[in-house]
Amino acid sequence: MKKLLYLLPLLLAACGGNGDKKPVDSAKTDSAKTASSPIPTDTTFLQKETTKDYYHIVYVEKNHASSIFKDLLNFKFDHYDSINYKQAYRILKVRNPKPLKKYDLAGLPNEWLPVYSYKGKYYLYAPSDWANVDKRIVTDSTIIYRGEEGPEPYVLKDVKKLNDAKYNLKAPPFYQFVKKSNINIYIIDPATKLSVWEDTELPPAYRYRLYVPRASADKYDMVVNYCKAAKMPEFAFDKVDYAALIKGR
Picture 1: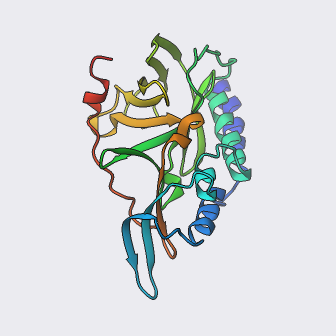
Picture 2: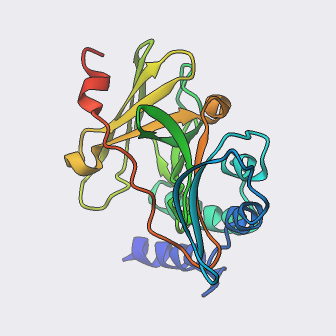
């Protein structure tokens, strides 16, 4: 009972602060502003639906100096990200009151962006809804998932470098229908460190993702999904044969 009475005010404090305000992702605002600017005439369009009252395009952004490209590669927390992260970290510390164990990442990059495949090429992706960007950050003590509710840290339980092209991370689960995360990171391109992330605890539909470190993300062009008036369904990329990519690794 004493333990519950002690934890209750901490949990209430951790959950307070932002009230009913939803976090504002500055990248959403920036991307809308950027995508409304003139698009070069040689742009490759993957989808285009335009009328007098409707404007929806999916195109390949090859200008790596563009604002939208810089927005996607920006991992800095804005004001609301910082508020949400601090709240989430307070809850994490209530659940893990002892100092967090620090691990040697052994060269594993910290900041990661998802990569997608389309017609034999890999692309970064600026989604219609920027809550779907799904960036990940690995620190020496946590793994941080950046989603709709802002940055969410989870305590690392173990980090191992298995060989020059494979790491293993253990952490509490991001998805609540499993009890833990067991993440294998396979580096499939030594030049850019493009990697397959495999969580062996998840069912096949959720198990694999392609990621690239932010430091080498500018080696890839970006697919941009933009609609002037509303959020649209996300672009359907090609299915990836992950088993083939990690076979023998």
